[in-house]
Image 1 (cartoon, helix red, strand yellow):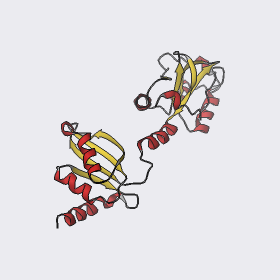
Image 2: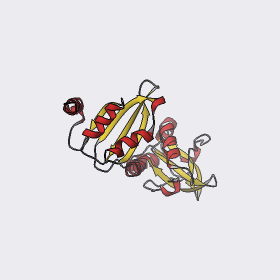
Image 3: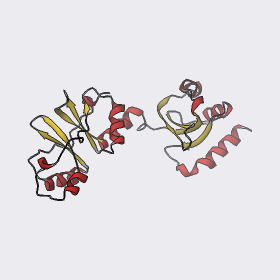
Image 4: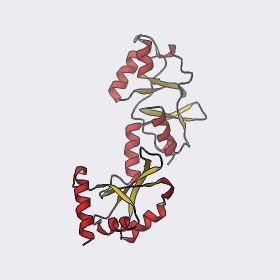
Length: 220
């Protein structure tokens, strides 16, 4: 999915001849910490609450600020993953989308993007979540998928992240099968370490007790 398809325009741009206190009011109104500054159709830069507060003259116009180096944005063809990376890297609450480097097309808010990501990854669907931990060098998605599908289940979504040890990888899987006995037994047989098990109905704090009980039952 490209950035142009993610534009939601929940937050309007502000003009350079408007005041800084108006910008702070809008940020509070729309629950963001950033606003695109646009003149006509030209994107000038990204205004943050920190820039306004550091200036400390709320009646001044926005155009007195220097936006050099404050032009974080993406092009219309930027992929969803890159959009997410830039939002995270620069700790942005929204990111402008531009065409031909300067033409403002709209903005993508981080809150809206979270909703899109949830639907795209399948994590909004009902079903249990299994978290595996393994050596990163041993990660084979094809084998994990084969274990899941070999037990008559499907992967609805997944993501990976490094644990505190960068040689260790945590793999989070959302699946559509509520009967987990065969899946967990197969993971155990292939020496996968299950470190998390969450269902729609049960609390995550019950994981260890439920997992131990199930594995003991399967070994009978």
